[in-house]
Image (cartoon, rainbow, N blue to C red; front, side):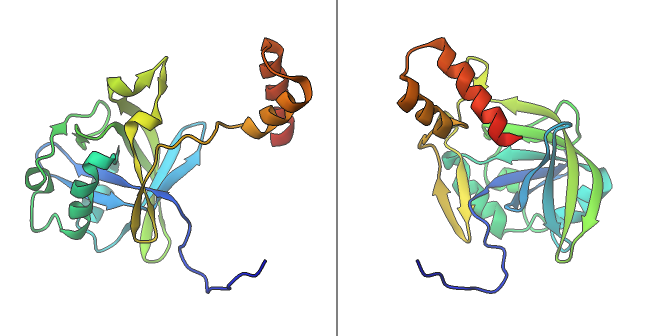
Length: 210
């Protein structure tokens, strides 16, 4: 199998598409973010990377707080528009008819139309070059009630979108869950239909991740 060799670039994909909100309920802005992700499980910590020249940069640096608002298919047009217009020129909430909701732990507002919102408090800022990375603790999460099924988030219902080097794509097609490959091997060997299956599969998974 042959491969083409390219120079180093930010080609990691897919990436989540989110709208980060900064400021407060009176003076706020929306910044679209593709450079975001999880950096730690316990405590729960995430990051967003922001260019120095972005309108939200100084607001974010001053407050040390932001909200990550997940983007569904219904919100994609609003997200894309917010990404090409500056908060210096327009009120993005008003322009896109988005609703501000007060957060529980931070000053930045939630976007009500977003299916999932993560309140974040910055604990460190790393200057990496074109972007500063804002590392933050996740202090509260809001989820639309209709997405909660048996105490878990149904991501298929959320219809989130992802970003792949300039292009947006839909998510939602379920391919399996963590450990499904080990479970498939177990079923092929022992058959299915017993509670013991699950226990043995979990044991196999633990061994593989150690």
